[in-house]
Structure formats: C-alpha cells, structure tokens
Figure (cartoon, rainbow, N blue to C red):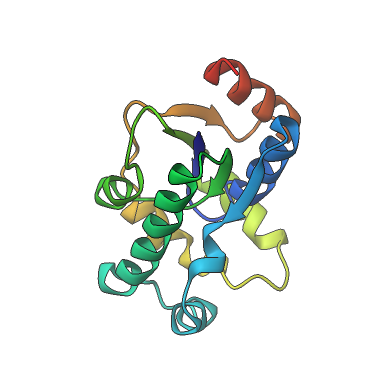
Length: 161
C-alpha cells in the first residue's frame, strides 16, 4: 500500500509522512526529491510552478509509484498533489494508493512557513498553493492544528491498519 500525504506547503506533509512511516515501519519518500534543479530554483526565487513545470515531476513520481506497487512495497509519500488532475496521474489504483489530506487554514500555515529557515518554499508562494488547491473528495482529511502525534494516530485509525 502507498499512503500519499498531500496538502499545501507548510501543512506538515514531510513531518507527518515520516512519523506515519516510522509508526507503521514503512519506508518514506518526499516528492520534493523528485523536482528538477530548475523547478527548485524557480521556487527558491518565489516563482510558482505551472502545470508544464510540474509534468516531468509528476511523471517521475508516477514511475516511482508504479515500481513500488510492482514490488508490493509499503510506502508513505509526502506530495503536494494540489490538483485533481495531478492526483489522477499519481493514484494508479485506489485500493493500493490511499490519499491523506492535511487541511489547514491559510493563517495557520503562513505562520508555520514564517518560522521555517533554509527551505526552498517560501511563504510568498503560499497564496499560489491555496489558489491551485482542489480539495480532494474521498481522502482521509485531517486537521493540521492537532499535534503530529494525534494526526498520525487519526490517520492510522482511519486507514484501519
């Protein structure tokens, strides 16, 4: 099974994803590692990515997901997956790829991003992330205002694993 932990930058995808993977004794991967150097540079300069920028990244993620499914690996993947069209590329099998949506208010997430240092995604790009966000239906939705430990417990309970 693959658990895709999605949401805007600053929602806690990497933190929650790693804690969830550790709790389940699964492997963890962060979709940021699949971005091209060009995409990372754009984001570092406060330039939002467009769909054309994201397509090679999505296809690389899709290939990784296909491989994990073929290998029957249990994985947690932290990935923004902001648009329904992106999720269609990534959720290859709804039985084997489960979506977890980390939902939070603009104000809360902006505060979190303001506290970050040395990260390529700045708070300046947050509005573009919320503008692009198409909230998923059928996902496990968790409130990011809870503690990471509570969030992980809620996700595991919702998944029934």
